[in-house]
Image (tube, rainbow, N blue to C red; front, side, top):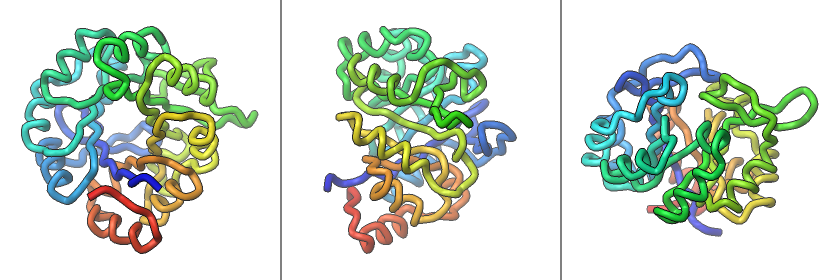
Length: 252
């Protein structure tokens, strides 16, 4: 088994880290630079920094904040939010990001995936997907932080993203996000079986067991979480120690 990754996610709004439940009712959770540094020191494997207002309000990600966060951490670092063209990617990589995450812009312009992969390499391109399981049993993808439903189905869209050159898929279940009842393991396993690129699980972490299940039942390559880390409910060294005891190898 390849080493699994633990990834804290910093959702940024107006320069502060926030965490909401089911994408609404956002509450503040601290300074992103301080949090980034703390996670790096605690043994997080990677960090994800999402400007959650960028796509919705048409703003560019705060490049200066990316620079400050990057200057304080020593682990790989993904940035997302408001990335619509190659110039945005170049600017963020120059500011210190290792990878970029594209979501709404990839659905609107799938060719952006091809362009990023061709110009910067697949390893730079993370395609994030916010999807919701409907009453009809289909997982539909959403735009703009879960505000607009699309016709794209989860498996078909992630396969297309892979074919176009995405290096990883970051899948957030909107049904599970923020409610801390566990990840969408059935959908994760379906993705892991159908794709050849790594899948990052997001949405639903509440206990160490949830991380274990994402890796075993969900076959995820990495697990991302926010509030359980930001509010100290789960500490990364303790989580890694627990996973090790469950026979799951993590990095570091």
